[in-house]
Amino acid sequence: MEILFALTLGALTTSGVYLLLRARTFSVILGLTLLSHAINLYLFGMGRLKTESPAVIGLVPDYADPLPQALVLTAIVIGFAMTSFVVVLALKAAVELRNDHVDGENPNEDRP
Image 1 (tube, rainbow, N blue to C red):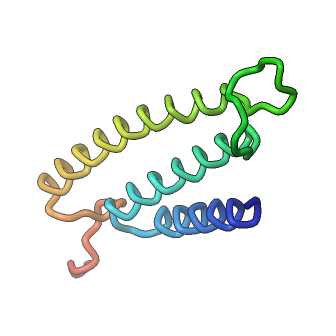
Image 2: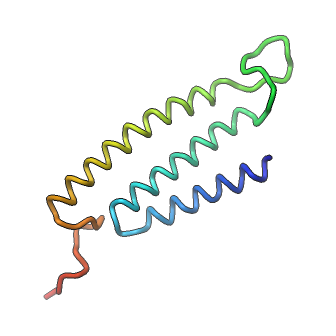
């Protein structure tokens, strides 16, 4: 289970960094979203990957920590709100500038 978890985490992080290095606005937004999902998985994994264990500390010595689960739930809500805001901001910038490059330059224009 840990190998699959580590491979998934690595694939999300690699894809997110690759998309962040692209010159298009939508790719950067998608890369940030993938990186936030990778961070959420990492935080969730810090609560110990256990099945059939209670989520609270009780008489059972083997439990799953509920704090990382609460942090991930909060991060998902905040990440969704920020992604929505950045998508609307990028769409407004694309309409105003008539291109979607991160640096604002259009590679199709001739330079003097």
